[in-house]
Every structure is written in structure tokens, then in C-alpha cells.
Amino acid sequence: MKKTKLMNRIIVLALFVFYIYALFKVILFKFGSIDIKMLLDLLQRNLSNLDRILHKLKLSNFIPFKTIFNTIQSPSIHDLINLFGNILIFMPFGVFLLLLSKNKGISLKDTLVLSLSLSLCLECLQFVLFIGSFDVDDLILNTSGGLLGYCAFKLYGKFIVITSSIVQDRDIVENQEFKNIEEGEQYHK
Image 1: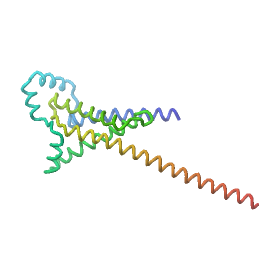
Image 2: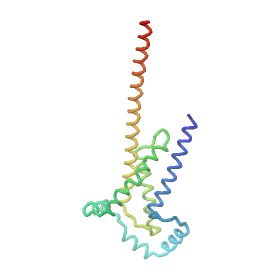
Image 3: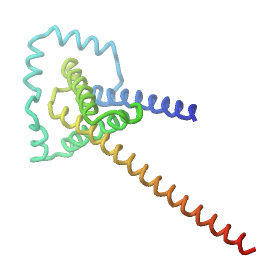
């Protein structure tokens, strides 16, 4: 039993590492190849040019819900994919946090803080590396995705426990009825 638990934990951890890799690849590199040398060159060039940083700051969105409301008011397919994609791409993060925590002991508050922290890290990297723009709404959407994944998995887990409990109870009742029938048959012989 311990070997199975250890193996499951290793598999979940490996999947989590792959998920984080894919998350960085999608958000930072837009499905392109990851070139560390290019990133370092970009970082050095961008940090040495103050005018470029100021221009990038002007293009950033620091007003909560601005991009979300603009998308809702005049939705384009690209904007809707971006809106829902930012939520969906972080849902596995909330699930992994639960799976990797001891005895499912991570709280909703911890999930909020960790989802927000990872999203902020990615947004800041996009800004500093000039491979995207900073948008506070991405923080809101990503964090919401992490929380939705957490809540959905928590509810799903409770549903599984309740369902398996019902099935076990039914099996116990059926086994008891079968034993009663067998005992009754033996009594009549």
C-alpha cells in the first residue's frame, strides 16, 4: 500500500512539473521554443533602456476589470479565448495544490495566495522580458482559475467519497441480506 501511495505521489509530482513547464511555455513563449540565451539578452537589453520600460508601463493595464469589461462589451473570438483561457489554464494549478498537499490540508486562502503569486510572477516576467504586457485582469482571471480548480476538485472529492460510501453501504447491506438468506437456507435443512 505504501509503495502505491509513493508511486502515485511521484506521478502527481511529475505531472505537476510538466504542467508548470507547459504553463510557462504557453504564457511566456506562446507555444514557441524556450531559449534561455535569448531571454537573458532580452532582459539585459530591456533593463538598460529606461525609455523602453516607461513605454511598456504605459501599455500595461493596472485598472482591475478593465480588460474583462471591454471583452464582455465587445467580444471578439480572440478576446474570449484569452478571457476563458486565463481561467482554464490555472484550474489544474488549484487541483495540483490539493493533490500535493498532505491529507488535502491546503486551504482556500493558501490556494488564493499561491495562485496569485504564480500569476504575478508570470505577469512580471512578461513585462520585464517584453514578451507580453502586464494586465491586472490576468491576475484576477488566473487566480480565479486556481480557486475554481481547487473548489471543483474539493467538491468532486466529496462527491467521490459520498458515492463510494453509498456503494460500500449498499454492498454491506447486500452481503448481509445474502448471509441472512444463506443462514435461512441452512436453518431449513
